[in-house]
Image (cartoon, rainbow, N blue to C red; front, top):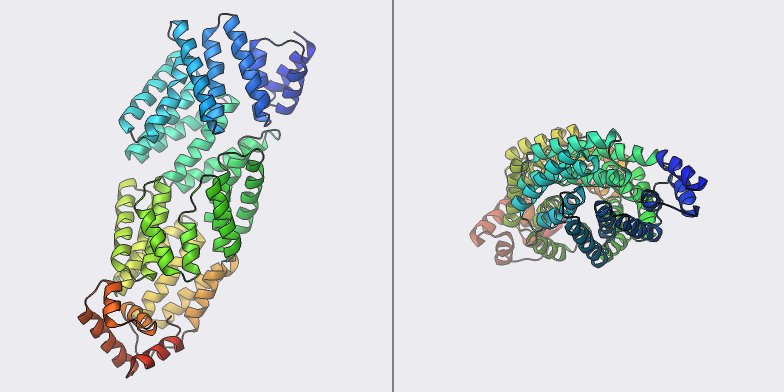
Length: 537
């Protein structure tokens, strides 16, 4: 062995990846173990082509030495890293080679169990939870038999993901916590450590466990920061940090992190780039920068992340209610990951209420409630309460809405999500106003305004300011009467209003009569003027 190889091994053990890569790459002669170190170091400093070449050399060296288990492992790691980069065909070829090597070894070996991980992922993606659970259990049992920390990390991760997919979120989270014990203790090697960190955080977000996601994101950030040369996992780490920062109200910092993630994931292009772009779009939309938001959403779509429901909410903000409603109705018919599905349902409630589709909004809200009851996640319960409260308010049940909305507000506050808490306060104010409690409504709007100002949520700030400036009505109209009045002011006939609100023409006529009586109006023209005067459009 050369001195360069010895120094490279020392740098590798110290996790000085750039120096390890430079020394090992310059060494004149490397054995199979050093070639594997070179492959890992090259991957960790972002030299993917060099890493692939080193894995191939290591695989051949192991095979020449008669170490078929080692050769199969090298083929597996190369295949897995290719899969993570989206190079499916090449990955398939290396998986096939690994399977051949395991078969030629003709004995029980750890490499054969590693090969079950892609099979598990296929079963999970196909929705075959029973098969996924069986494979996960087999991986974990074999990992303990072989006493292989990397394999055990994958086994526990797979078991946790399978449990969550089956609906047993509590057990899934316990398994993910267990795998993270080994990861944070440094028992797992660098590549699977990064993979497990990202997978656990994504699983926590999919299960709406914001507290765990935030805790493990900070741990991942610390792990990355302790290794300045590290490249592959830093971008995904920043995306997750941006998501958590947005939820907790640190929007400026979230934009900075999301933009850093975009830059890192763009060169070379990483499969997570679409997620970073979508996150930027969300932040731009919330801050009232629709042109930038739409550009980010379109770029996200180009990189595999459908801009749902963000683009539909942009269209709603532009006043294109019919376009937004058509988009969310289409989204509701499609299936996806739970987090996206629930975000779509929450957006659908807002959009369909604006479109006058009370029945559709109620269906979306009820589905959120059922999902929250099934998954028992605090974040999802808050989303469901906020959606149901909005629907009850539209159904003229201000008292019922107030109970649910106050519960939502408390849940958002416990989760430390100030923007969502402020949105709930706006609805609470509307409910209080419908119940003729103008003082309580003013207090809630003031509290919401302070939050929107601090966050820089310009569209919501404009909305809450308009609500606060509305002149007192001679007699309070119900939310349903306001809805009918808006359609009257838009020039709709009673029959058209009935069709849009899915109620009878008789009921519409009764609402119109009540509006005229309460506001002292005598014609639809006067009703239109009244709607404009009191900012009801």
